[in-house]
Length: 120
Image (cartoon, rainbow, N blue to C red; front, side, top):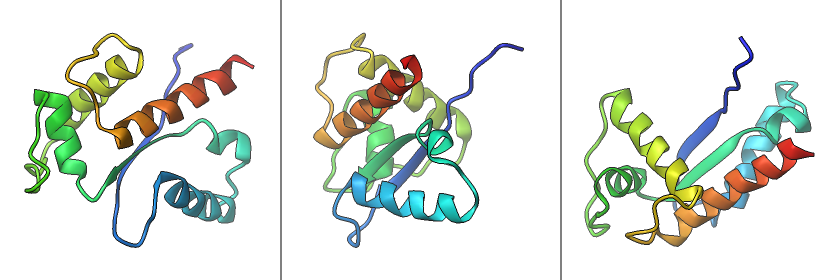
């Protein structure tokens, strides 16, 4: 009762997607076909990794990853939820080291944009 839920979409950007905005536009097109309004869509936080989502999760959980190899696959929800909490702490500026990759910065900016829209 009285709680807020944030929908987070985690996805890899494969070779056919230039950047997060291109994939977000593709999601928006599909969402419109399902009757999702722009206002509803703008409440979604997108977290996009360029080719290596597993590496992001590994980085968020351990502070390090080797992107020359694919990070470990996650078979359970808890490590992914822990990574999402870590990303939130980093986006809030609570955790600064080690620095996050630019693509994770994009995701933090996407989250900050959502907060601004919610404050209006």
